[in-house]
Amino acid sequence: MTTPRILDGNAIATQIKAEVAAEVKELAVQGIRPGLSAVLVGHVPASEIYVRSKVRTCEELGLYSDLITPPDTITTEEMLELVAQLNAREDIDGILIQLPLPKQVNAKLLLEAVSPAKDVDGFHPVNVGRIQSGQPALAPCTPAGMIEMLKRSGIPIAGQNAVVIGRSDIVGKPISILLLQQNATVTICHSKTRDLPSFTRNADILVAAIGRPGYVTPEMVKPGSTILDVGINRITTREDFDKYFAGNTRREETFLLKGSTLVGDVHPEAFKLAGAYTPVPGGVGPLTIAMLMSNTVRAAKLRRGLTL
Ligand code: NDP
Image (cartoon, rainbow, N blue to C red; front, side, top):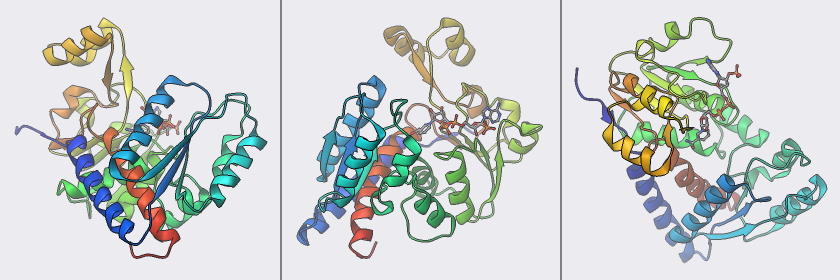
């Protein structure tokens, strides 16, 4: 058995960000500076970290960005008013509403109020429909990043059996559509799927977007296949650590230092059978922010009728 290839999300994200920075420079010559507005409601620590890192990346790449931080008492009506203002602003090409939102805010209504032209998360039904029918649109960042990962790593998609575990609107469904557009033969599995391994064992490309630590085990994997592990699960107990990483001294150092470590939806033992796989952390994760930057520039160009 050959050693599986690790698909390095950090390296590919760096490449994409460099390309975005170059595009931003080209647009500057035409007097255009793509801008992203991030809305962060309240004080959810994980959301604060994500949003700050998005804003920082904008600055690094030369995009304009602003951060709006309404209190967690904000109402749906006030949020709708804020979105309407952002929709109307000429200097803003992308609007990002960090989820989760407080309970009293109707998230669905709000996400549909974002102008599809500025919907850089690709969640608006208009973008979902356009992606489905193959029209120019803004695709959700994580799935779009996964396609970039495969393409830039020279992994063929056309004609391959792709099996996606998970059917969420954010990951499972859109990655299935994007893989189909690249001419893969796609099977979507979910919690009601009978005999999941009978599907996954047939996968040349296996996408795990479940949200359950180490759920994909070696007997579910086709040897030599490509595994994209989207799952991000934090483990904090010694028992769990040993279940997934027994004997991994590097991981153990981090675990002991921080008191936790991340595991994907794929058991580390299952990766050993793969031809190539995305590690957790450092695989699919870093591509999400890179694609958000790329989508903001794309939105700026689409909105002005410029060639992509
Ligand atoms: P959701 O909880 O929205 O969806 C999970 C999906 O997994 C559902 O479709 C569910 O099926 C399916 N599922 C659950 N249990 C099983 C099972 N036993 N067998 C088969 N299918 C099952 O999660 P998300 O799609 O939002 O996220 C998935 C994971 O990816 C999470 O760990 C999340 O943290 C991570 N993530 C990572 C990102 C990144 O940037 N790297 C971005 C977004 C998410 P059903 O529909 O039937 O309930």
